[in-house]
Amino acid sequence: MLAAVADPVRWAVLDRLTDGTQCVCDLQAHVPVASNLLSYHLKVLRDAGLVTTARRGRWIDYTVAPDAAARLSAALPTAPLRRTVAS
Amino acid sequence: MLAAVADPVRWAVLDRLTDGTQCVCDLQAHVPVASNLLSYHLKVLRDAGLVTTARRGRWIDYTVAPDAAARLSAALPTAPLRRTVAS
DNA sequence: GGTTTGATTCGATCCTGATTGATTCAGCCA
DNA sequence: TGGCTGAATCAATCAGGATCGAATCAAACC
Image (cartoon, rainbow over all chains, first blue to last red):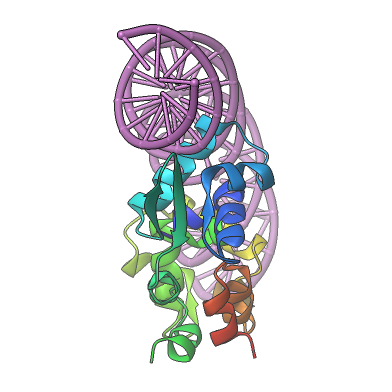
């Protein structure tokens, strides 16, 4: 899961999704990669459980998974951070 | 920096260092990789600023950098997590 | 049905980074 | 000084994942 975040493209996607739900076309406007490549990275994020999808007519909306923050923090190895976030 | 953590070997090293300062020989006893490979991963962690070193006679002690947790949290893209940890 | 648009999948290539073995460096001890 | 040990570095290999181009799928509109 950390590897899923440790990629510039996917980081940008997540950072963008942080502002709220976005359709793929919207993400494409802000993350300058080919559409099929974006689709690939979205799949990686999906497989990591960091984002969820919902089809809306012709479009597909992506949202940051509700427990993404908690799961990411749990994945970090440093104890101080774990103590800060875990609760 | 996230890429530095997103590797099983380096994750194990950081997790081990979480318990306190360790010399390389000690790490080697708990992380089953070749010594030169361990040295390589330690260099990656050093370059990422996640660990610090201190020579003690023939040995070199590794410690998690004091600001590692803060810097890692800052590197995560999800806003909720940033809010939780930042302060 | 046929076409268009949004999005994914497939196959092939390229490239970064992990791993390996051997070498080199730094400090201790006889 | 010479030999030994802990640790880092170097050059080369290899694998996994990112990237690209083309094809495919799904829904909407005509």
